[in-house]
Image (cartoon, rainbow, N blue to C red; front, side, top):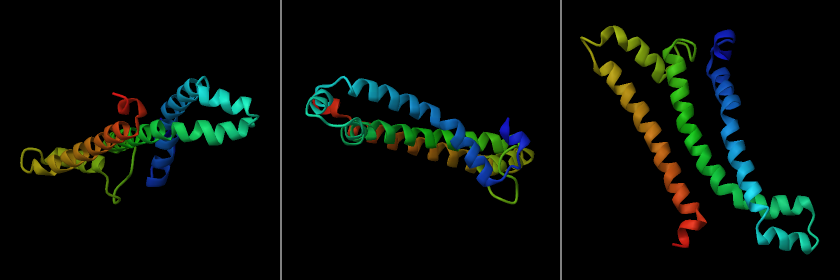
Length: 150
C-alpha cells in the first residue's frame, strides 16, 4: 500500500520492506530473551551484583545472536520475494532499473515466442530464495546449542 502512494525507487522499496519485515525478528528476540532470563546463568549474574545493562549486553544478547542471524537470513529470502511481486505488479522498482519482477512482467507478452524471458528470472528468484533458506537452515544447525547435546 505504501508503494502505491510513494515514489517507487529502489531506496524507497528497500525502506518499505525493511519497515514491514522487522516484526518477526522482534518477536523471535523477545521470546528468546524471555526464555534466557529464566536460566541459571542470568540468576548467577544477578546474585553476583551485575547490573541490568551488563546482563543484557554480556549475558542475554550474545545468546540471542544465533536466532537473530537465522531469522535475518530467512527474512532476506522473503524480502526478495516481496520485491519481485511488488515490481511484477508495477508498484516496485521502475524501469530502466532492472528487477526480477519487472523482467517477469515484461516477459508476459513473449511467453509463446520466447518463454526463456520468463523462465530465467523465475529460476533466478527461485535459486536466490532457496539459497538464503538453505543458508538459514545451515546456520540454525550450526548455531543451535541444543543440537550438540544429541
